[in-house]
Amino acid sequence: MGQQGQADFDPSVCFVRLRKVRSDGYVEFDFAIGEPDLSVELVLPAAAYHEFCRTNRVTHITPIGGLAAAAEPPPASPSSA
Image 1 (cartoon, rainbow, N blue to C red):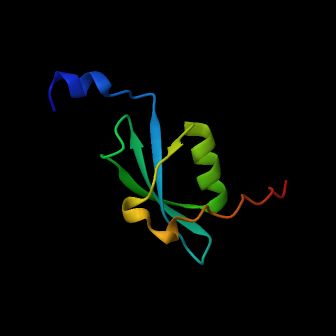
Image 2: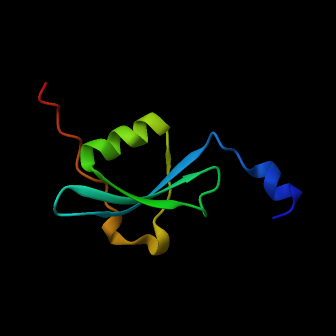
């Protein structure tokens, strides 16, 4: 990546690519900072996933290959406080 590519890198921008909403309530997704093509795969319960996305102010990006499994996860359930 040349200097032009480095100038485009913005560490304040976060990306999420939803991979799968599992039947056990967990969400599999990719998380990237600054560059959507370099990410880590994470797994969180649905409520934690929603909080993670809200806290990091993520930009949701299209799944690789437009997989149908990328349906939005179920809404976070209200906490039982």
